[in-house]
Image (cartoon, rainbow, N blue to C red):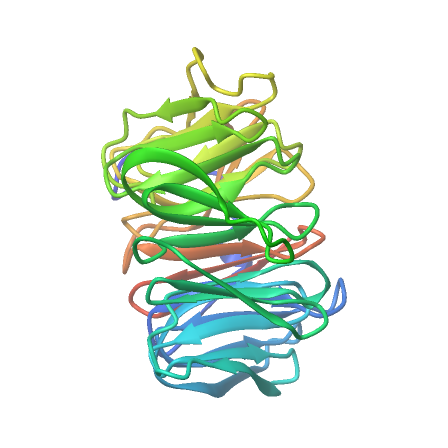
Amino acid sequence: MSDTSAPSNSLVERTRTFDAGAPVVAIGFLGPKGREVAAFALGEETVLLVGDDGTERHVAVHKGGLLGAASDGTRLITGGDDGRVMATAPDGTTTEIAADPKRRWIDNVAAGRDGVVAWSAGKETVVRTAKGELRSTESGSTPGGLAFAPKGLRLAIAHYGGVSLWFPNAKEPPQALEWKGSHTGVTFSPDGRFVVTTMQEPSLHGWRVADGKHMRMSGYATKVKSTSWTADGRELATAGADALVLWPFHGKDGPMGLQPRLLAPAKDLIVTVACHPREPVAAVGYESGMVLLVRLEDSAEIVVRRPGGGAVAALAWSAAGTRLAFGAEDGTAGLLAL
């Protein structure tokens, strides 16, 4: 495979592509299973909603750039450089969750369970609880990413020097997990035993939550901008290389002392990954604009979008795994129904 070719097995004819109108920042599926609306957060003010019948609707959400988005399955939470945190429903209704009093940029957002939302502005991170109460904490530097733990109300905040684990309802200060360097994103393992950050350098860093033991994952060609846990939670799939990198997390020590699996090798860099929510399959987006489905059991590949156009900026599966959405930096977007 090269950056100008693709596997012969193809779902291209079943993939509907369209012009989103602006670079795609993130994607979420909203609404009841089987009838979800695909919500494309665009870099310039708006969210594009595409119904299961193919209808398209642009919704004005922010007055300026849209900087980040996260979905809880019922609404798309977005942050903008207008200092507002917004929620967009499947029917296009928008609601202001919060407005920063200093009108600082909302750099990161995260969606938790029971309607809980988190966002960061400057060095401050704020959580809006299920009861609508606001809790805040301040980091030593601007947060690079936010992620809720799979159970309970606990938030991971990535920043320069490591990650902070914060219980917003507790009076105790956040627990500090330290590692030198700039941490640009963060994720919890599905079982909550590990927390992993992406870094400004081409590597990942992780900690075992129980005792803070370190794990370093390196060897990438470029900065890792995308990670995704496999459906069974046993591996972490990552971009940032010319192959799909899968780190093992099924043992008590995670990937410590172990090598990752490498699938779907190519001459082009992988920039985005999204694992199927139920099956051992990963959607993989390349710098060339190509999108593949990769079966994790045997590395079989099926092309969804052929190379050409902008790099793939976002991938998302519907909750049942029956639809895949992708969006590119040049505004090209697509939907595949399986």
